Image 1 (tube, rainbow, N blue to C red):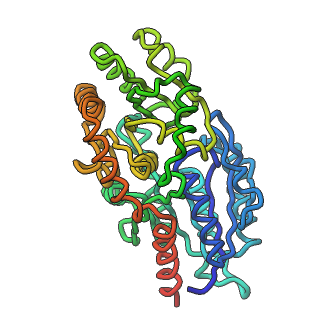
Image 2 (image 1 turned 30 degrees about the vertical axis):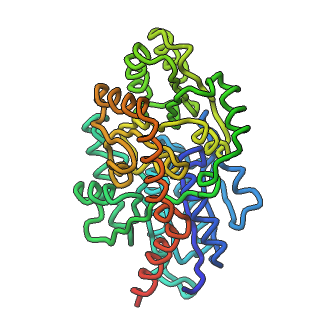
Image 3 (image 1 turned 180 degrees about the vertical axis):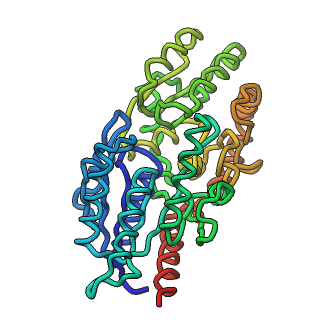
Length: 400
């Protein structure tokens, strides 16, 4: 397809699936010859920044300081006008937004340029695309807040030419809420730069990692990779561990990540008498995540809301079985061949699933190998960007 001018907009480059997805997309689109600019807000918070990956990248990056996650008209209004200004200067063919706040402000700013029109700027452009990584509304928030988010997304959906989701389930939920029902939807599974996951590090590195965190070399290690944040489900892992630890001596739990709940979770572990069984890595660089998984035996994922958690296919690429709550897009990768899918918040099922894998190393190996085979092509960067480019092409070709 012809080279395009593309602007991606995301709220902040913290460690997270949407952010990693966006960086991979920008990088590969630029490699394919497109003129790519990324507009982002400042990376604020304890979750770690990915901003350094934009340094010396093959795409341009603009930081809008007012582009923040929280709803605050004092900064949201200036952010909107700054986005309009930059888009007017860049005059892109495609404006592609990510995340709730950037998705709303960015789509309004992009759509406003259509209305402007000029002799130098096609009034049908820019075409506005939005990726749904996860929905802002969910069952665990105040119902009034959910209704507010749905109303906003329905209105903003009218200013969107096409939607991309990271899982078929996201498409189903968005349409069921009345969002963009007359607009095209496509699923592009969130790409992973796979080599470090597919290739196990030397055993010496795994041994050193386990020694660093006081994990016995012969222990079975359950790993959870997630921000220490609300709705990530660490408390369910701790409660199931309390039950398992009463019957099994040589198993440990590893929490990879940091966040505002670090101290409360450590207190819960202390109260349960499990201080010697739980290890915290704190914040680790993205390039060390493959080692964290390779040095573990089973991935446990207990988030209560997630588009499709990238850590699920990441673990499968490492050849590790997964235990996951059956939420959102998890069922699109986790099945009886690749892991164990359980009811959200069901600690009995979580405990049984972990014990089953703890007691059956051969099952762990078989599920891990099946998972690797299942997701390698599905989550390859080229696969995702092929889909995204086809969305762009279809939109461009449909213009008069």
